[in-house]
Amino acid sequence: MKRKKTTASQKREYTQAFAFLTPAVIVTGIFIGLAILFVIYLSFHKVNLFTGEYTFVGLENYLRVFKDDTARIALKNTLTFSLIVVPIQTFLALVIASILNSKLRGKMFFRTVYFLPTLTSSSALTLIFMFMFSVTGPVNAMLLKAGFIDSSINFLQDTDFTLKVIMMMNIWSTVPYYMTLYLATLQDLPAAMYEAAAIDGAGPCRTFFSIIVPYLKSMTTYVLLTGIIGTLQMFDQAYIFSNGSGGPENSTLTVSLMVYRYAFGTQNAMGFAATLAIILAVLIFIISALAQRANKAESLY
Image 1 (cartoon, one colour):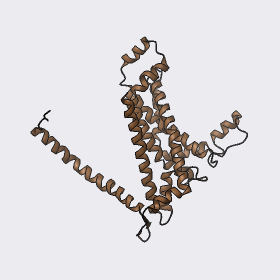
Image 2 (image 1 turned 90 degrees about the horizontal axis):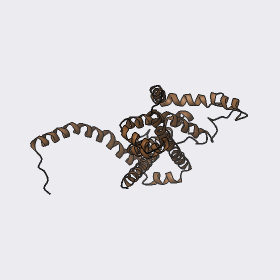
Image 3 (image 1 turned 90 degrees about the vertical axis):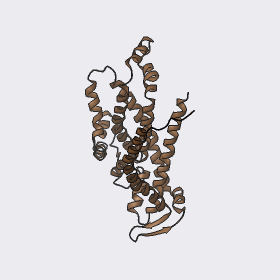
Image 4 (image 1 turned 60 degrees about the vertical axis):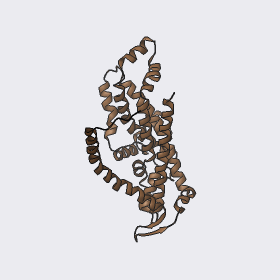
């Protein structure tokens, strides 16, 4: 089969497109590509920021990660956080979007109310939740009044609750954003599909799982990928919650927070921090690639 010849006008369009893209590619290469290469370079060295001395240590930093108990705790916390938060926030966003897309009275009001947490900064939300779950906060007050507990729980210092509180906060603050994405996609779902389902006698649950869920498959893949990347990179909430320590007893320590602590809080540890950052980036890439591959495999059936 012969390939079509490129016309003069097409060549001119390609040239113009490359001309417009070139500055962006150059800037991206300088500020992202070189930065990545520099981080890789740092991971093979022991760095003294005060003297600017670089000592080549080979794979020592990488071997140290697998021997470091704190690194294993941070990795466990990060994966646990992602595995719990992502499925819950995705499911809740999908369900709420389906409800708000139905013929619900006052749905515009509920859409606005649900979206408000997205407009609030992560730092402000963290401080609000820290107040709510403090010993004298409203959560303890409600639990005491309802008779569920006999004495106040120190959610902010109890290792059994600290990470769970951050999970709740993250779910509450991210569900509205993903709900908006689902809702925007559902606006394009043909009404004829709902009518056909109603004629076939499908109820709300059957319509949800047989029509809405399959239709939102591509958007769900996007939501899962961005959710995984966001939760694996979680830093600011853990930092504010623990005042940068990852405590109590490393219960809120994440890989991103550990990178920060070693990079700026420990002398001669910039190389180790760079190694942790690379491992986190590789982990995110692998999980994202597996998720995309699984979605493509399902699309074949």
